[in-house]
Image (cartoon, rainbow, N blue to C red; front, side, top):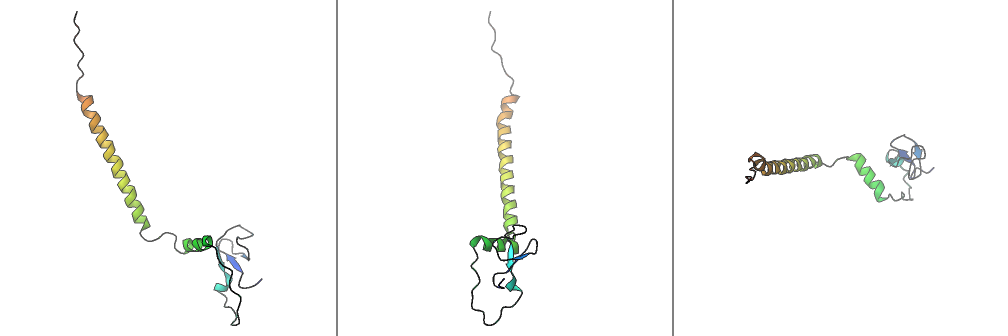
Length: 109
């Protein structure tokens, strides 16, 4: 196996040269050449990574972008306030109708 194509599975630590690990079928990996230096006369380029692999790498390095947690809680809070506001408005609209005594029409005989 060439050092340039050797990949280390980040889940089961198996070394392979396929797009997914043959042992655990994980697609999260790191090239072994990241830790083992290449010889000086290296001329063959590393195989191109797909966009999906690059995104997987980024998620492993930085699982949540900074500020996304606070934005998520702000959205949830705004939604909660809107629900409470609509519920109280509906309750106020219904309350006067329930509190008024109902008058039955007088029966004439």
